[in-house]
Image (cartoon, rainbow, N blue to C red; front, side, top):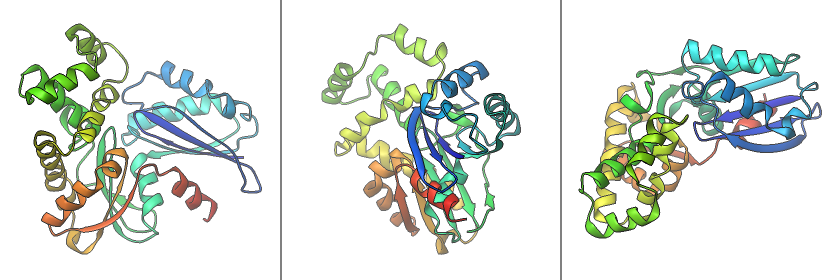
Amino acid sequence: MILIVDSGSTKTDWVLIDTNKNIVNKTTTKGLNPSVFSESDLYKTITSNVEVMTFVQNIKQIYFYGAGCGTETSNKILSTVLEEIFELATIVVKEDIYAAAYAVSDRKPGIVCILGTGSNCSYFNGKDELVSKIPSLGYILMDDASGNYFGKILLQDYFYKKMPKKLHEKFQNAYNLYPDDVKLNLYKKGSPNSYLASFASFLIKHKNETYCSEIIKKGFSNFIENQITQYDRVYDLPIHFVGSIAYLLQDELKSALKSFRLNTGYFIQKPIDGLVAYHLNR
């Protein structure tokens, strides 16, 4: 059996395929970012997936694509945990940008971007090579236009009282914003980037408000300038996007791309179906 996994910082999609290329089951768990979670947390999340663990002795190949797996250290952490659990399987661990590329590229060259809890951007040659001009340094230093980027701005503006009064009240009513609880989630709990990203839904819901639309516009412009325009031939290639932020704000993102004279490619929310198709048709 083959297990295909696509993991962001917030959610992980699992698809188990039998020897006849039939899908046995599809499941979803919380994210498995080795840059954020400890080995024990990773182990606990994986082994709690009963639908997968039922077939643990039958799984011979695992293709794992994950946020936070782009560095040697984090990749090794995740690989070690998987090897401990799936002792009979051959395991391949790659960064989540590969899943995005395989899902949207149609096996043609293009720029592939992730805008979800975090953000990322690479050139894909249409085969099996990805080139990243900018290293991914996570939610504190980078992640322009991601869920955690927008969530951070909203929290800052709320506490600095920069939000328009009407939105300030709505934001206050929508979330637990008691300072001690905010600090607990940011500095003591295991997934601060996902916590920050949880506030982005407010921005999407109120995207037509001038305050929100300006934040969205600035975030997308930053991402395009800092990430996409770093690549050669960028004005000749399609720009593809994967992730909830890109998918749910695609009209605004298309407008931003147009202002930079860039070519819009595909937008998908979750790459798992395209990723499965890629592996089944290899």
